[in-house]
Every structure is written in structure tokens, then in C-alpha cells.
Length: 191
Ligand code: AMP
Image (spheres, rainbow, N blue to C red):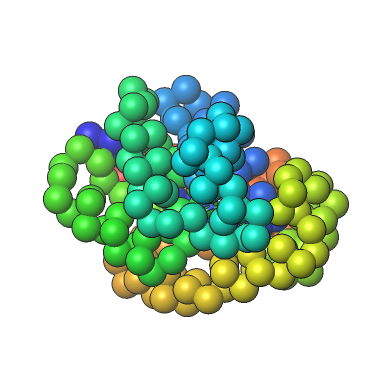
């Protein structure tokens, strides 16, 4: 049985960095970032990558089947006991699809959905400051933020009702956030 943790947060919340550090500090964890998985496909130059690039460059969501396929293959391809995925779900449709996939099997159990909470101002400052990709500019940021916020209440409510939502303050140092997140994950796994 694999334990799955999802990490969600606004662009610039630091979710990928946090999850990456957790997996680096504990070898029972594998970490996949949906954004990184999709960017890797773009970088490969494949036809699928070209399609994906059209969505990422505008700050829009990549279609459901592409993303679900990317995360399910990542989970299934990993030999680690614990899996962290950041950047999923980003829509009600994605949330329902994962729920359906999980309900139909008993290999993977969703242990928690961790939201890394930052204000829009902090998110903007970080994204524009790092300028990691072509989508890190003010105009695309505004759209990414809009796309992030639109389903967030429904996503929070869904996981709150299942007692799976855990919110972490993302406006602290990386060390503080990661140690908080890591302690929480250990607590959940020891139950
Ligand atoms: P991120 O690195 O998490 O900020 O993601 C960068 C971009 O990748 C997003 O703006 C989307 O275009 C795409 N992306 C990442 N995760 C998802 C997802 N779960 N569903 C659809 N598109 C996604």
C-alpha cells in the first residue's frame, strides 16, 4: 500500500521546493511536481509537449487526460512507499477524477492534502522575482492566480469534509515550512 500526499498552493507558494526537500531528506518518499512533469514533456520536443506548451505559456490548465496520465504513470512507476505530488488537483474536475481512480483500487491511499497558504502579494513577488519560465511574467501570473483561485473553495471544502485538508503558513522561511510539513506528514503516517 502506497501513501499519497497532495500539496496545493498558489503559483509562488513554494510547494515544489518544499516537497522536493521533504523527499530529499527521507528516501521513503518520491516527489513529483505536475508542473515539472509537464515542463519535461515540453522540453522533450514531442508533439504532446508542443500542445502542453500552448497551455503553460498562457497560464491555463493542461487538459485533464494529459495531467491524470502524467501523475498516475509517475505514481505507478515509483517503487517508493510514500508519494508526494504537488500541483494537483487544480480543478474540481481533476479532484473528482482522482477520487474516482482512488476509489477503484486499493494500492494507493490518499493520506492528506496540504495547502501551502500565501497571500497574492507574496505569491506575485516570488514568481516575478524568480522568473523561472516564460510563464513567470505579470500578465500570465494574473491568469495563473485567477485559474488557481476559481476552484479553490470547492477543493478545500471537498477535502475538509473528508478530514484530509491541512493548511500550512507558507510565508515563513523554507526551513520552517519544511520542518512543519515534515512533522505533520510523519504524524499522519504514524497513525
Ligand atoms: P506550476 O509549476 O505548478 O506553477 O505549474 C506551471 C503550469 O503547468 C501551470 O500554470 C499549468 O499550465 C500547468 N499545470 C501544472 N499542474 C497542472 C495541473 N494539475 N493541471 C493542469 N495544468 C497544470
